Image (tube, rainbow, N blue to C red):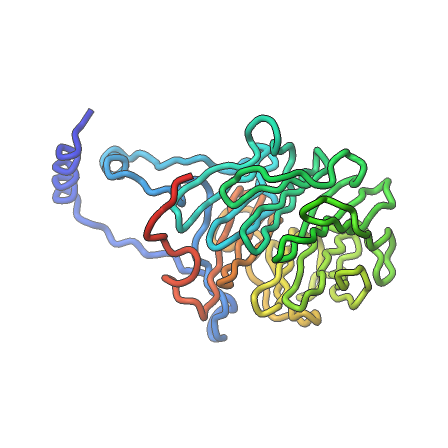
Length: 362
């Protein structure tokens, strides 16, 4: 084994022997593109643990000298995403767990992959409350698992297999008092609805929605989120629209519709809202997310569909989440990645992804 000083010496000799070659840096995607004023910058992509865990000096030198590729623990088939102060939770349906990219803490770990209580089968939708507790919809087990910020299992909700047909999306209020779980139902079921539970006791409180296409009715709903205005925004996938409800299930309004133009939908998946109250909708067929006002006015589209991976390029986008600093996190199932976008008004060295001064180990 080469020692550290030997590696340094070889590196210096290699640097002297090979003159540096200028390479053109890739152009960073900006949305909207110039000459319009920028609102979002593509910032980075998470593929594996190597994207957040700090590399030691010897490993870095070996890569430099021997041409080794840095590898890490990657994602199998990601679906949903939630984020809390730069800690990114990604449901991995292939590996039956939630992958956690702790960006400021520079660490990676998994939740729900152990034995016993809290073990996950097929995690789908995710959300976090105001304390960073994680709520996970298990599509296979047909229940909701709750974990602390450190990954410790806290409780199981809506268990027994009687509450859902095909649970997919979830939203929890900031106080951690109430959860809203979307049941997609399926082609042969009429139970296309949102079920509401007490987030602490698991008591069933109410349901709203039934299968149909009229205002307030749902057809293959996919996800739900709570807006800044306290209203619920539900992705009504089979009706190609977003419906808005009060917390008691009262219908408020609807926007969107089937089509290929901006402001319309083809295969809408997940939804999120930013600190200003704007609504973000992922569309798998378009390969992007669209940003709307709470009333449904289109503001901006970000990303594009592509059969080749790249910055802001998507084949099967699914999940979306927004942190308190306004950064947007977008999952692509096909490319097994999470792209991160920074709002133009936020400095690159600001916000929750900044490295912690003191890292608390798990």
